Image 1: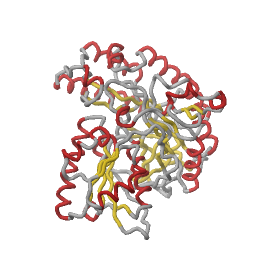
Image 2: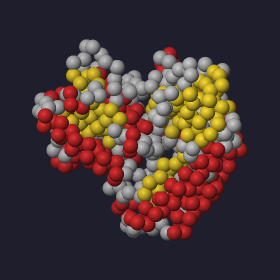
Image 3: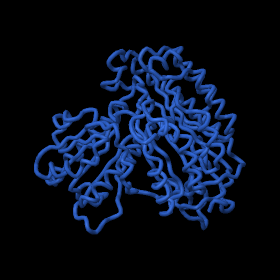
Length: 481
């Protein structure tokens, strides 16, 4: 499962630096994982060349696009409600066209045009380069659909436009697709098989971001640890590669080192990892380079071996513990976060207690927790009965969330009294007199603004905390400035 952005933050319209030569207006909303937000930047870049500037005002847009998520039913229902809003606006502005992008578009395909009469265009995640043709189709009064999955496309040759950016941090996509076939997940069906991007194109993008003043990047993929560049093609075909291709292949650990060494003052994060694919060399590379942040998002989904097997997670509880122990031994101050599903089919109370005991062992810094949502087309939907009652799912999810809150507070309390490097990202949501930034562990830190500025690295002494936030005072600039 991918890391999901909180749905309270999802309706994020993305704003492109205006090109005066463009005379059409584009409005984009993105929902779901970080990859969708990154994809929206690619879409805006492609459409900028077709005469579109982005706008924050949906009512004035010639083209409205919604980049969708299918990983949970709730995410899809959110999109459908937004389409109702678009329909109301379209009645006032009948020239406005509406397109659905992303995983929901890929899953439903042309059926979307029948279900949502307002929709003019449906575009899957691998078809964004066809947008110029699709826009021409809808301009001429025809509906347009392209949801063909690609075996090659990585958009490595498209320079993303940094939308609604703070000018400090940016996403850099390195892989697309997933081969793992977890029984609950639609990603392999909506984004296709794993393929990796040319490392040189990644380095070029990172260098460009540094030259433009960005201080932090997040390397993105459905499963970043599966990154493997051997000259192009699907990862599953690596065995067919030539000896020369294999000798010069770059895995994720190698890519991390390349990026860290190319820009030694830029902070590097990555997401998302899969326990079965994360290797010791990745952890050792993280420990070797100070600019690789000490934070790993490591979804486990369940603490029960029986449920992990039902989910087709190719790791056991014991193997997960071994990986956690290796991380703690090699990077003692590394923060770890989780994805957890409550109420997967056939989950018993004993299985649920196994999940809680696993959480007690790890004591995660953060968590992304959901009740199981049956997704059409997945193996779980086709082969398993969704047999855990809704009230039981809700109760188990509440217990998981409460335990995570307890552990999150335990983790933030470990920072009190320490002085930590913080990259300033913007003004605190709760106080205009305070800055907000994050430390290497990805924990939010708030402190008085004084004379410091966005994009600066500051040493902050941590004086107090909540379960989610560290509160302190700046004691000077970091040596990274």
